[in-house]
Image 1 (cartoon, rainbow, N blue to C red):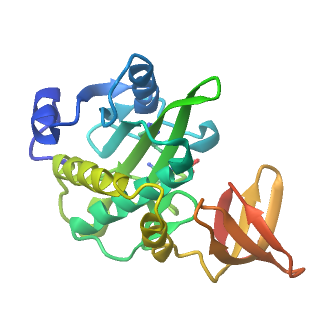
Image 2 (tube, protein in one colour):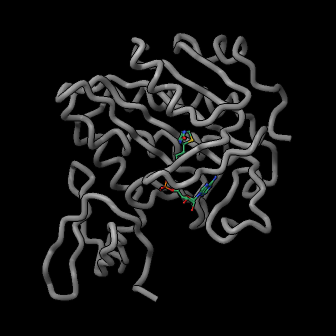
Length: 257
Ligand code: BT5
């Protein structure tokens, strides 16, 4: 098992104070619950945590695996300035990588735009969803999933996903991870919209300088990942010599197969 102590709302409230906390043993998606809470007036910093998600999702509604007792799954309500939006993902990824390192895991890296890797495999994903009233930003839901002891053996994710426990060969306490994650998020929020946050994120990216393939909708783009700008846009040097700005997509190291 992952924990010494099973998660419970009272324990989480105590340990994660002053963050307002809602805890669910099972939920569809913590992002949906946090969005409903945001719309009902949740303060910035409110956090929804689940032991298991039955409809956990990634970008473009792809499924995110969160079996019971084996993962950290949380969504934080943020109320940033609109200018800071591009950096929310950077903040989430940085908080995760620092938390993962704090429990003793090495060989960590970030992969553009939102993956946290351990030994080249995905240990965590970050999903930011904005909530608008017309053209007014009401807030952002920052969802984070971390594999603590998820067993990927025999699943289609086995070649690409990893859990902290597999890597460490020792149990990892989810409460400690949640505390650290929120503390690092609190810290990086103070730097939202600054080049300090951008530079810290960029320094961790494995992708820069390498040949990559980016899938962007139906387009397949290949080239050298030359740089990322302060909004997180990837600057891809194509073989034609043209520098292309890629706002979103899925990146793989290397050329197209
Ligand atoms: C992400 O999407 O990486 C964002 C994942 C965010 C999950 C959190 S959990 C708390 C909150 N509530 C939610 O409902 N979501 C957030 P993306 O880059 O689109 O990657 C999704 C892909 O990762 C899937 O298509 C799978 O290939 C792979 N995948 C699914 N589950 C995984 C897991 N547990 N570990 C590693 N890879 C996984």
